[in-house]
Amino acid sequence: TERILRAACQRKGIEIRWNTSAIRMESREDGVSLLLSDGTQVSADFVIGADGAKSTVRKSVGIELKGEATDSRWVIIDLAALDDESDHKELSFHYAHPGVGGRNVLILPFKGGWRLDIEARTDEELQTFSDPAAIRNWLPNVMDARYCDKIDFVSTYRFYQLAAERFADSHRRVLLVGEAAHLFPPWGGRGLNSGIMDAASAAEAISLSLAESTREARYRHVDAFEQDRREAAYFNMESAAIGVDMMAPRTLRDRVKREWLALRTRWSSNAARVLSSGPNGRAGGRPARRLLCLPQSG
Image (tube, rainbow, N blue to C red; front, side):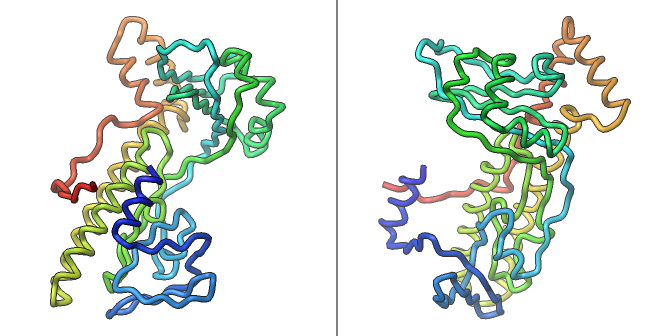
């Protein structure tokens, strides 16, 4: 994907500055100025802030992320495939897996291997379960012991459900996309998928704004972007919350409900569907307000 995007930028004559960050930015009614880490001053009509959860761009225009961080902590492990592995693979999610002390475990297949997520209960456990020696101790309780020699990558994360209070600054010159604008639990791919839509929508809003001659018309295009993508972010937050509450119930009532559903899955497909919301939350996505018609490359 990155090679395709870089090639597209090269064809359009877009300059890419590697290993360079924006350290200061000022937005005005007539444009934006940035100071880069190499000392370069840059002026632009618009800026798209796609600089992640700790976004300098977002902070420079005084926009905050609102929402909550849950107590859910997870260790991610990427495992390469075994030589004799079957082509038939299925995703599985285990509530309270008995092989790892009743912790939740996700086993997700992908081409060339597996991703395994295990829930930790404390920050100390997060460090312990991500230690390579510790992984080799508990991994055989979850998967084939031969995967102990197939560990490619280990990382950790926590569940966040946050969205920017605004997706554009007051001058409608700075537009926020991706994790600069929202943070969701990684289940279901909501962050990446909505981030792509954020970026496409921001690019379209800027393209339309550049063709306008009045401030009011420019505001209208950016405001349409801001409203649509913020609504999408809140939809995704609500969808993810359903899954988080199923995976990590906060009340006795929710815990009892999950156990009751687990018992009913033996004869109720509806109970199974409800339990399957754990890894992904509410199924499906929020329909876009309109279809974005983007030019085809090549």
